[in-house]
Image 1 (cartoon, rainbow, N blue to C red):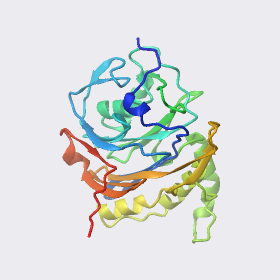
Image 2: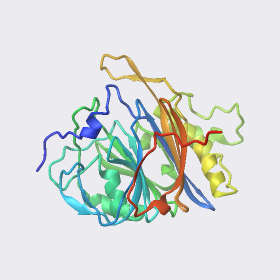
Image 3: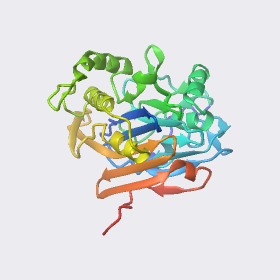
Length: 331
């Protein structure tokens, strides 16, 4: 067994003190299929890379060559962060996983080589399952374990959304009382802490104010970047979407729904002696799970670019494409 704290060189070299996640993920079922959008809100560049993992590849269940190995069942195209960590991806069956920060995650430490870690959970689901229903059936039998990484200023605690082409959606959280899942309409929006249970309860209290709303309606958000406000914000604006006229129109509409955290926005004091840390929306990814069309928008440091691609056209190939480089047309 490899029970020691591990180091992932590509990760450790990239992290700085005071990192925090604050993201939003939204799905939308329409007559033209299911669409998703998510923001990555972060303290620094995660050095996102678009890449692939292919059917038949042999992968380590805990990452970085640790733990048992398994054979990948489905091709996937994913956004890798800090090297080879799969945070978001779509597999060849049209199932997507988003990974978001969740400081309330409760997961026991890794105890065996067969444990899936919080860092490899998204990749494992994409590699092995074709639908939300398959994931739901598999979850009770999967074994999980948390690991620490040298060089990380805060413990990385996560939760996940799983969305498939049928429009089914699942949010997975690991809490003190065990594994909790939220499925269907109640799972269409997710942010970070507190738990989905509490977020949904808050939304249910303010939702009656959304009928016959105008620009002056107080829909429940206090207008800042904290998770409960972003949850209500995205839920409210998602509820106002009307049927799209095209796939492109649907993607454009949905991309406007999440609260995008402005550059240099203050976040919180992590007690590391550096005072209040700032964060912003580093990138946004909007996708059609029916057609595979994807738009990746990167807005961080000196980069301001938009990359368009189709995940299904890229399945089964070998590539790693940096998403921090500007591909915007210059006139």
